[in-house]
Image (cartoon, rainbow, N blue to C red; front, side, top):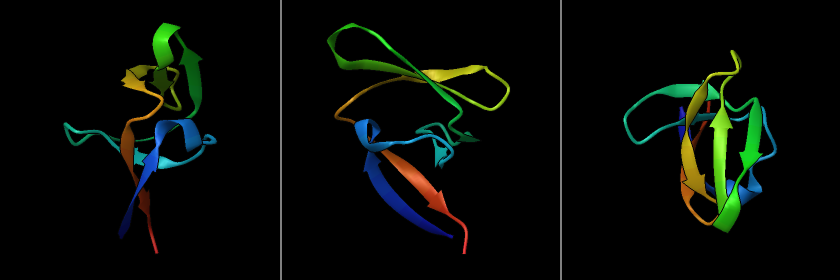
Length: 63
C-alpha cells in the first residue's frame, strides 16, 4: 500500500485517507466553514474531523 500526502483543498472525494489517530475512511462529503476550515465525512455520513484547506492528509493507494 502506497501513501501519498495531499492537501485537503486538492481532495475530490472518494479517496481513502488515514487520520492522524489511525482511522481509515473514504471521503464522501465536505462541509466548508470559515477561515479555510473543512469538515470531512465518511461514507456513513459521520463527521470524521476538521482540517484546514492547506493541511496535508495521507491518501492510501492500494496496489
